[in-house]
Image (cartoon, rainbow, N blue to C red; front, side):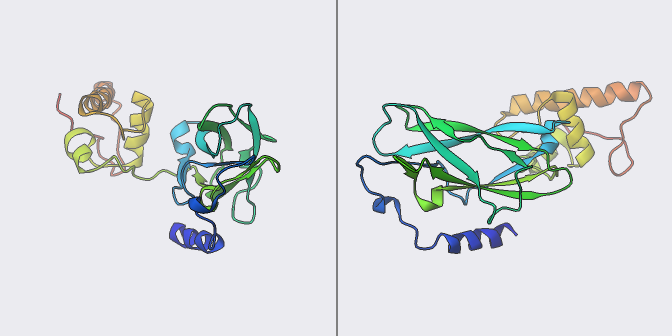
Length: 227
């Protein structure tokens, strides 16, 4: 579905000007997302416990001369390209790009979609005066929003073998509960080992209380870390 959507959006953007075709620069400046629409974000409320609303940062950038004063710009939910509605995201009337900055960060407030999986397509609209949207392929930000959980990319063969063992949703949920950490993408080996040991000691503690934690196969949950 994601590939199909990217193709549709590619057609929609066909003929868009390249960076070289944006005028350099008079009294008009341009604001755009730092990544192209192809760099979509996958956000799952699974990683936020019982939260009904979360706030995430998104980077934007300007093209042209540095602003000497703060400038407002608008980000809208493109309802033609989205499956999400206004109930899934809270957007302010306008954002502010700070003066003398080439890059800035805006905050997006997202609401838990429950059992639904929705696509949010955001579009930068500028301010209709001296700030316009930048390159077409950078005007859009795609967010795939859900409460689903799937095996994370970092849970690879090395994690299987040396730290956590075979992936399962109950094990992943317990890992987050025990350690408070659900993303190992940028963790080094020693930190990974420390978190895996936390989970191992918890499982051992529960076993000592005759409250064995079971995995999806009905057997006692285990991890592979040594220690």
